Structures are given as structure tokens and as C-alpha cells.
Image: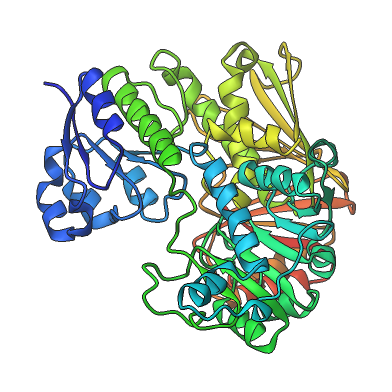
Length: 528
């Protein structure tokens, strides 16, 4: 029986043609995504679900989708998909990360012009017959400084356009290397420097715990008077109440907002503010972009449903069926090593080196490197996957090095990942034992053996008597249960590392108490 796909949002007709040409039965119901009950009642008839942003793929919908194998998002953002629920049920979630980059970048530039020259209000005034020429005094962009928060795929396109307008461009992006910055013609700066120097600021970064409200009241206070703020990326990057206050006071000279915390934004604190230009999430809304993402998502879903090929998946590595049995445990190890290092990396990332030793060196290390990069980049970029990770690393000028060699130590298979930042190198190594489970066997040159659980506590300290008891007491007093306790040290009384698996998230106040213990250098929670 041919696989069957439901298109539940408005998608280009070209997508329907691709599905049919690949032998996939397709049901085009572009308005059903807005009817939750109706969608819930028919979803069990389909092997694939092709969506844009209107359809909400909730845990309830996934539970009812007994046949569903793949969800394809025509676009980048997957905020409307419950990925953990999909993963738990074995449903692959795909997106099309590069199909609408140019369109979104152009919209940001258009918003910048619209705000700088007050075009929407001038248009409304003129069409009302008022001819208020002296009222709409604009700002010239030539020779002004544009601050980019995020300089990846979309941000780099904005940089190129801005440089073409003879603007100076400064960028804040932890993953942007100095070499890539030079190549783009931008100056890499820290966030406070960007706030202090930029005449206009545009955001091009995902919404994560680190980037939520990256522009808030304190940030606006650091900016130049009359600054222009553009957000065509994600609602939640800018504190809307703080931006409204900045516009009302004149501290912020104007703002262009395409995305909101709550969408559809029928009411919002920003509405009515002076020199504010708003659009209803139009960043990807051009016929070219819609065509691109529709074609891509139809091709990706068809390839998976017909051939079993996986690409641009957010919750599954791209591995062929022949490679899977042997490679999967090492893919998991590589991603864990990357995630371990990525969560501990807080400064600009310059390079990643992967050393493969033993039998693993003869495997498909491209897939393993992609998995490791996914882990490294995930803490900041969130939606990165094994397909997009190498591209994102290359765009940011992150040097990726692979080294293969025959077995030289006690382990038959061995992977070491080393991250190079602006300040230091940090390495972590691991192996896969006969039970198929990945293990950490070395951190920063310190030997240890640890299996990583969902919640880990990473502590670096001086090896002194009483430390383990003090740490256990703090966790015990806080009601945090210890599952496993793993230790390593360079020598007696020297540098030591403690990896503790706990049964839940460690509260911030407990972390502060641990960090204040004698001989502790760092205490950080890790999630896997």
C-alpha cells in the first residue's frame, strides 16, 4: 500500500505534484490545521503530516496518530511541534532550514528602511490627503553601525546587504570565528559593545533559554539614544514591555517587529507605540520562499516514506539502513561528547577536533562528526540537526578536524572531542562497551568512567578531604537524590572532577551553595 500524507496547512501546489510523482498518496486540506478536533479525528489515516506554522502537533495529536511516521515542517521553526512526544513514539520531525533565508533577511532590511524613513505612517498620511512633508524626518543608513545579534545563515545575508548599503556591521555570535567575521566584513564584538555602538540592532538567533529576552530593560539602557531595533527572528527575544517603554520614552528611536510572544497578535503591548512598524510574521512570506520550502519538505518526506532516507531530521541522525546497527551506538556517543563540551562552552567557538581510534576509525566518521557537532551547537541553536550542523559550523568559521588512527590504548574503540575557544581547549573522550552503552572515560585529561544520565552535575575542584561529604550533604539537605557518583583526579591533592547523576534538576540556589563550598572551582548542571 502506498504511503499517505496529509498536508494540513497552505503549501505550494508543487509539493502535491512531488508527492504524487514519488508514489505517495497525498490529501491536501490546507485549512484543517486550524480545526484541532477535526484533525485529531482523521490523523490516524496518515503516514506523514506536512505542515507550516498553523498546525499544532501536540502530544495529544501524536498519541492519536497510530500510523504517523514523519512530520515535515516547511520552514525552519518547529515551536509548534512537540518533538519529545514525537521522538518517544518514533515519529521523525524534519524541517527545511535553508529554504527561506534570503526572504527573511530581505524582510529585516525592509523593516530597517521602513522604520528609518517612517514609510508606513508617511504613506497613510499622504493617502489621507494631508501632505505632512515636514512631519516625517527620516534617518540615513549610510555610514551608520548595524549590530547583528546572531550571524549564522540569515544574519550573514543581512550583513552582506548592510555592507552593500555602506553600513558598518558589528556582530555578536558565540559561534562566529574571527576568520569568518573577517570573511564577511563584520567586526565580532561582545554584546555590551554591540549595544553601546550600534545605531540599529537586528536579531537573527533562535529562541533559547540563553537568548530569551536578550533585549530587555537593562539592555536597552546600554544602547545609544534613538537606536532602531528590528526583530524578524522569534518572539520572546525582545521583552515587549521594555521595548514599549523604550519607544514611549524616546530612548528607542523606532522598532520593526515581525514576530511576537503570542501569535496571532491581535492585541499587544507594543501596538500604538511611536515609530513602530509591525507585520504579521511575514519574514518567510514570498512566493519564492514558499515554493522552496514546499519543494524541500515534499522531497524529504517522500524520500523517507519510500526509500527510508532521512535528511534534515531534528530527532534522528542521517544514517543508511545498512550502517545503522553498528553505527548508532557511536552516533549516540559522539552526540553526548559534543553536548557535554557544548554545555560547558561559554566563549567564542573556534574549532572542534575529533579523534577516532580503533575500529570506530573505519566507520562512517562523517556521520559521527555531524552528530558531535550537533551536540556541540545544540545548547545555543536548539534546532540544529546532523544535516545542518556541519553547514552551520562552516558558516560560522568553526574549524572542524577529523583524525583517524589504529588502536593504541586499552580501548578497542575510542573517540576524543576537543573544543577550542577564544580562551582555552577543552577535551572529553568516551567509548562504547560491549553492552552498547556510551561511557565517558576522560574529561580534560582526567581519567574516569561515567555513564551519562538525563540530569548530571559537573563539578571541578581541588582534591581535598571532606569534599565528597560536603557535596553529598548539600544535595541531601536540598532533597536532591544521587543516582551515581563518578570521580577522577590528576594526582592526590591536585585538580579533580566529579560527575554526579541526580534524579532531577538541581535548583539554582543549590548550585550556588555547591559553588561556595571550599575547594570548588566550578559547578554546572548538564542535561542529556
